[in-house]
Image 1 (spheres, one colour):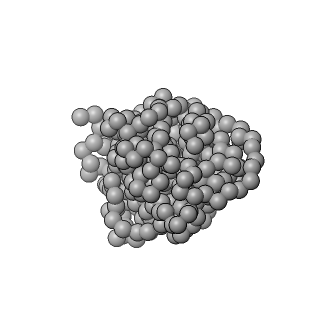
Image 2 (cartoon, one colour):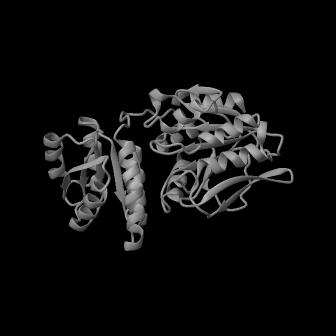
Image 3 (cartoon, helix red, strand yellow):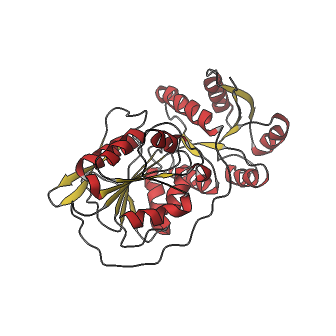
Length: 340
């Protein structure tokens, strides 16, 4: 078995030791080095040729963002950011995702959460080892304006699922949505504490209104509701309207929030009036839910392999026969609007 070669970059010796020990337990990972700063990391990259880098963003000397941008420009490699959940840490993590990092993992705040963090990081690092790292263009905002309408169960709604590489993919899709676009509910695998900042940033960029979902929010045209980190998001029919349910509960398909749960709720409560979209990500979350949507009469779209950072989730859905249409990322917004 080929092992993923990982370089750990963090200015804290304690964190370097925790990450090195935790990652090394998995037989599919080889930690080939640990660097205390960007300069040491750059020298080690040339010598050791890692497959994946885990990167702290707040470091002395060259900060993590500057290092990331230089790395992706000169020696593109998959980078997994391991960041704190402070407000400044969240903003830096979002900036790193925009620059091209493939994923963000929250640093454990307590010893009791370290094992869960390491378990998540192991899966992400192994998936990131095969990620496509390349500049991704963002289109201009789609023109268009129209009156807000109340959305009833006879009108279209859109549900979108994404994981690794999904923050940039979602940005591109949502920037292609005009103000009159159908209501959109999103599950993006993201740690608790990052989703509110992510939604606020998208709201600044997009014509549609984007916010972190709250329980009982009404899904209406021109609105995008994003599942909070560590909470499930489900679509419910409430009289003549659709509302969102935000709740806790066990992991589903290995995740909370789970794309499968959102898609299955859309199949049940919206049926043929829904459009399901599965974007880049590792694993299988969303594939079975998308199949239920298609079986209920919904239109379904999967991102194509050439534009995915990781093709895992779309590949699984395609293999199950859950997909009506496969589209390159720049064409997905158009496809959604045509179907809706």
